[in-house]
Picture (cartoon, rainbow, N blue to C red):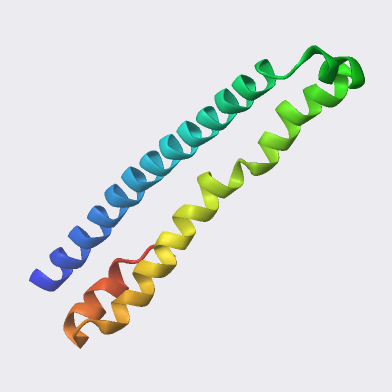
Length: 108
């Protein structure tokens, strides 16, 4: 009976921690992207007027919007997956009873 309650508690805690990790990862990714856009805007502001006369407005707009948007999955999706992979690989060094508990708590 206690094992069933313990497993149910593990699944509930797993859901809570997964939600919390998703919120933290999303906020961190958005903060990184915001900082990138701000630093890009500051860099463009410091450029000379000759730079803007040689370029079309659409090119600059594409650089600011599309290229930064293409980078967005790295901090929001790749970094959390990387941390998860490193954490999962470190589970192998745990004693067998802790490894079993850790494996049961992983989200698939």
